[in-house]
Length: 262
Ligand code: PGA
Image (cartoon, rainbow, N blue to C red):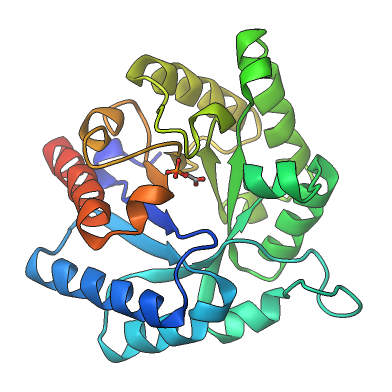
C-alpha cells in the first residue's frame, strides 16, 4: 500500500461562473508567475474555469508551461445530441481538460442533478479513461439531524458501485458540506477529521483504500494550514481561488504540510 509520505496532494480552483476569458487569462498568468517564483514539490494544482475560458486558459498554460492541469466544472452524461446548453466530454478533452468535476452540490441543488445522473456522468468520464472528481456532501438539515454519515455513504455508493475497480482508480472524492460552501463558515477541524475518516471507511468498503479525499467549503489562506492536517489530501477551493495570492497561499500551506511528512 502507498505510504502517506509518497502521496501527492491536489488543490483545485473552482472558478464557478466568474471571470470572462480576458480575466481568466490574467489570473492564470498570475498563478504561473507565483508558481515559478515559489514552486511546489508535493501538490498537483488544477484549475476549473468556465467553459468559454478553457481554450484561452489552455493556450496560456501550454505556452507559458504553467504546471497546472485543467478541470471542467461539469460535463453531460451523453456524448452528443439534443442537449441544448450542455457540453460533451470529447469537446472538453479536445481543449485540454483531463479532470471532470461530477455532482457539485450547486449542480445537484439548482440543476436537478440526482444521484442517478451523477452515476451516469461519472461512468461516462472514467469509461473514456478520464479523471473524475466526485463531490459529495450534506445540507444543514441532514447535518443537524445527525444523518450525514448515511447520506454521504449513499451518495458515494450510488456513484461508485457501477464502476469497475480499475475505473474507480480514476476517481478523486471531494467532501463538500453544502452549509460550508460560499458561506464563510468552514467545517471545523474536528468536523473535517471525522467526516474524512467516515469517507475513507466507505471508500475502503468499495475497494478504494488509497483514493484521494479533498475537502471543500470556505477554505481560505487563513484556515488551510489547520484543515490540511485533518487527514485530507487537498482542497477544492471556490471563492479563494479567484485571487492568485490567496490561491497560492492555500497551495503553499498544503505543500508545507506534505513536506513535513517526508
Ligand atoms: P467555496 O466553494 O470555497 O467558495 O466555499 C467551494 C466549492 O464549491 O467547491
